[in-house]
Image 1 (cartoon, rainbow, N blue to C red):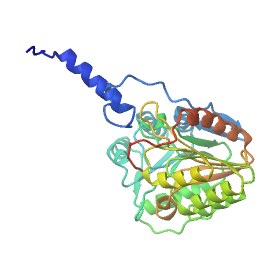
Image 2: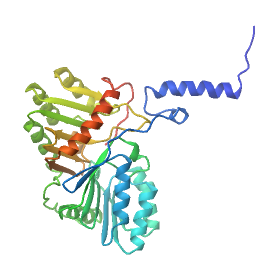
Image 3: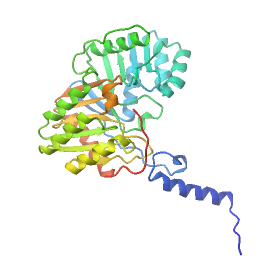
Image 4: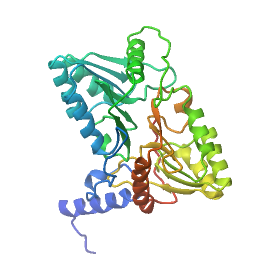
Length: 351
């Protein structure tokens, strides 16, 4: 009988093989030992009517530019904040006497363990907002009349996600009003919600606006959805499919609540694909595109009961933005061709 003595090199090689096998079917696990994948492929920024649709790391570039160029005020209202470059830029703005203030969700672990202590150390006024039965899920940066708003968090690992935000160079006062409302509430002072002007959506009516937009579709509906589980939205999509509208859906593979609605929509004729990660990132976008950019909704709210009922969210509804539609279609062509019809065994969840 011959007994083989395994060396440390043999063990490392066997571990690598095992992790590579696991990495093909799971988002987490032994990814640190896996061979690096290609970087996520996202569209280039596109500009239309004073607005820019940014994807991936371009959102970080836009955020840093906005913070660094601010002179009067810089307000950040966001769910997750832990990126060191963003934190440093906020501190630098405070040192040059810009009115810098930050509202963070009270429950998000990275914001509380990294964002809050770093900002407080640098003297940046920071408050945490508690939302009963939900979270403060906004991703909004407002500075000197300009706004960056969408689905992208400002966490250290957020920029790899398939996600996008919109930069508006001519923002109306509603965005500042929204921030001030959150600041007041986070400071423990009861306050009624302000009235909002378009394109900012009142998060009390997000579900209704999404459903109405889907019901108005005559040709096409394209969606990128981290979580697609709200009954009213799913029913509206099913109605659109049944009346002959072309419906395309790109979903995150890990959100288990989306799976049954997605299967039913696919059975009825919608094109459904699950995102295939490059490096373990998420398909985190929340985008609804109706009739080639006739209506384009993007923001923080997932298409879920939780988002519409309990969370504090911020979306914008844009009209007649064909260049934004073209960028989204470019992303869908790539990611749906890479995607799968089945989500696979991975199972994680997030708001």
